Image (cartoon, rainbow, N blue to C red; front, side, top):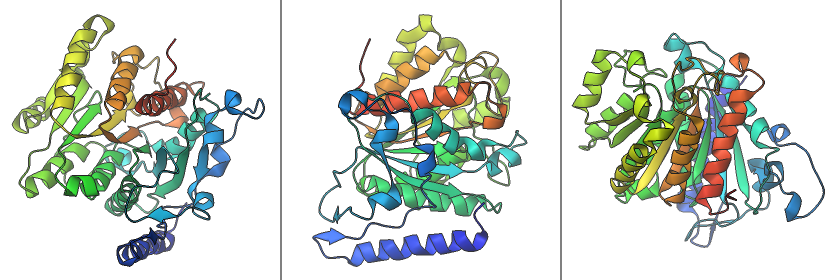
Length: 364
């Protein structure tokens, strides 16, 4: 567990590093101190021998602190030494506030362990920037720290995968996007949430049920409307007030009953319209969008859910568009998982997203 003193020191280090970045010469800049220790012990697995033909994710990922000992960043262009970046958000404070079942703080490690042994048919390189931990109940401070880490990684020119954590992770991811060069330059943001819930609660204290209303309020403060779409909404899981909030905010949504295998044409049309509405995508995956048999290890398992085939299809379509900037995966609770089923499913989605984004997914 990270102490309040450690968290404060970490934030100070990052801010100082970013100040140094701004004042650095045009040729190179110092890599920023991003997060807590990168958990290298999670990136282990079977090793069948040397060479690309035996490549797995645990071969492809480098912990940030090891990477930063030799990496040099260019101030005039994006760093090309890695294809993707991971950062974890160890928090279930939002789930606790939302009266859910806590345990999602251990999700990032389980997702790494599930992804590590998966095979890569074409080489990719990834940076693991470690974990932001909310260990003192100060959720807002943790989300701000996550936002600063995501911004620093995004501005290196590569998509960022955030491993949650409760769905409060989505607001931290958004803060990172909002601070990025691309958004500041005027790119149109689109937020696609794969979720059984709108997560638009108007509660006094932010929680795992409020992140997208927080985003909408931030966008409104800037004189903008949040471009927010939800795929997989479950009617029994959302009150009439939440539907009214969604309608007031102009949210586009597709119910879970329209997301089955026989409705893939509707799903494709929905995703195509979403992609046409934006330049950069924030993809947020709440694993409770999946049926409980596929994803039992979540705070609120789905009685109906969207089939895994459809969710994976949507993820691949978004990734292949070239518009994906940030993806977060939320609500994995290892304490509630059966046979690591949910962790493996979440890891498979991450694998599909990153290989599709780089055109390296091997189709059957």
